[in-house]
Length: 307
Image (cartoon, helix red, strand yellow):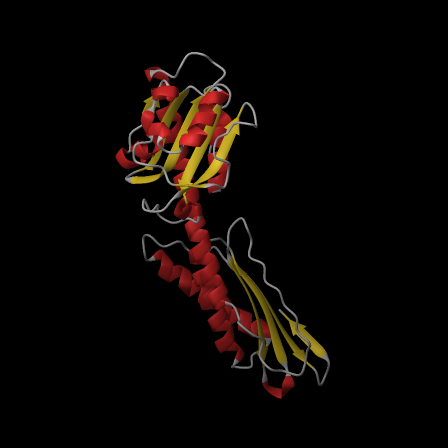
């Protein structure tokens, strides 16, 4: 119950892994580690030929000789983690001092871990459907009794719940990255030559979710210049793509040399048509709305008209 409430509170892969490790210590394990494929951290699909990265580590003490957070790790096939990654099944090692396959991973560090008092281990693969995102390891030191089969089942349940949240965060990270890339490709690369105004700009995408924000500087006839700032309601790829359509429309409408209010009226009608087109497609999200500020500055009369 606590796992369902406390793991997956954000759409951040690293934070979700940390929540799982923190939840398990100290009630279930004395140390818990989460190792994910690098591609998962970036929002991609896991690639089994690549190393994993220690993403989270929680423990009752801070001096354990386990691999630190941020360390890249290649698990050998004979190790419990390697076996879990290869088969997609959990592994219980009740006595680490006699687990030769685990020692083969890193003889020196394994000896240090055993001397430290770590005596029992459960590894569980992080699975989301057919994808194996990484592996979770639960380590026991303080309690003398080793992990048993009942605790192995509980570990599977904990990791299964966390895997869904980590996969959701991975998918969100992927879409966020794609939306950022798309949005940046649709924004102006440089400002046009004009003499009416001195222009400076800076664009910072929202961290919580990229939407459909845009800006423009458009030279007009008679040395005038138009300034545009707009925002499509919503986040993600759909909002970014809609922003590109509206930005192109403003470019085209500005060539008609219309007053700002008339230009925004045309833009409003366009949004309505886009909404109708999207509504006709079952799996498309409608345009909730958009805001746009359109200003025309005339350096001759020194007036600025905005809508």
